[in-house]
Image (cartoon, helix red, strand yellow):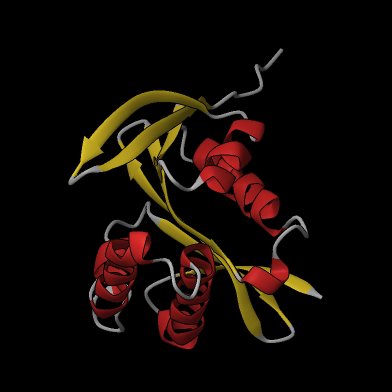
Length: 174
């Protein structure tokens, strides 16, 4: 059975290790065991685990504002998917979409996207955006299928990153 839980400042301690495990497994699966071309990403994963995904920093980074949110998908007591949202004015920035490799292609990412879009609507956002690492073709294609378009491409430290955006549609009242 699947559950989606919104992590907050009071319950984050219950989920932090599962969030860290899910993130690490998702990215290490992307990198692979011996891809020296992606060693920089391995270092970024380790940095994230030691910094923004550490026990003492998580709430400061992902739940900084009362309007920010972080969702986890739980199956059989294990965190199998995550996604965070930062509200910036009328825009929502999506961060840290991570799915355990064994749980991919089961609709978990779509479920998290639907949940975060509902959250964006409830906070009256007009635009949602995220930044995708250019080599992460799976994420790029997934977000395009979810209605996001590449709006900007930048190169930082030799790596390409794409900003993807999607307009939030609100039902009009009659």
